[in-house]
Length: 375
Image (cartoon, rainbow, N blue to C red; front, side):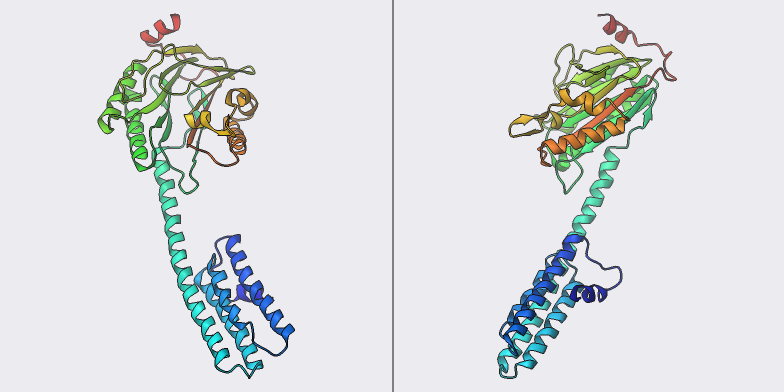
């Protein structure tokens, strides 16, 4: 009954933010009820009225300051009833009532400060989400002859933003996808990720040769970072059913074909962007229904009790069925369950499915790709 009365007295639209805030108010009212019951059991006395000072502080843990005031007023009113019933306390009873009022004022101040901090954090999270959307634009659901889905899994619950990046573009040279991982964390990593994506979104339409794109991206990174900073990246191009991949120190994509999982390792290793990589392309002929998983190293490093997440072993079961979006959702669920919700690093995921020849299927392959395919 006390809880119902307290909720009815709250200003319209100013309810607790979460079930936790209701729990804080509920705990405060439970304390009020328990102490009242003890006082009633002791007879006409006010021996425990001083405990009522804890009531507004319990409410202040989660609730708005208005709720704290309600809890404090209720505690004061109940305390005055017991003090009035015990006429022998005199000054002691008055001190207890004043103490409850002071506690209510202090608790309301604390709740106000906490509420402002919570509002500020919520605003920062909103701005982080906006920044994330500006850096990582939504991809898919279809780009050229590919069904595409992207997913970003943040290791930090407070901010869904980091240095992992991906993009998929339908260009005159085919569908081109990049996935990358900036060394480091925080705003510097976000800044460098935005630089790489900005440069990529330009050169993907200008360069016919993926290797020249790598050179351009490497220069953009080198101009923007220190000697020890770098960006691992994999660039993928699909044109007319031909898949071309160049890899700059990045985890190898996984090709899912007819129940098998095939790591597409590069013909030769190359350093990350920022270290002047000289890449060699790997070329594969796609079949309708083939899927390709691109990911950052946070997936390969996810582990529990020293055991790494078995990406290759589970890839087909998790990713080979349903839509590409469903596949990534299944992978994320399995991954979070594996690490018990505690990721060490952010993870970017892109899942592609080749659905058959698209409008660009008759476009000729660049001569350097023909050579790579025949080598």
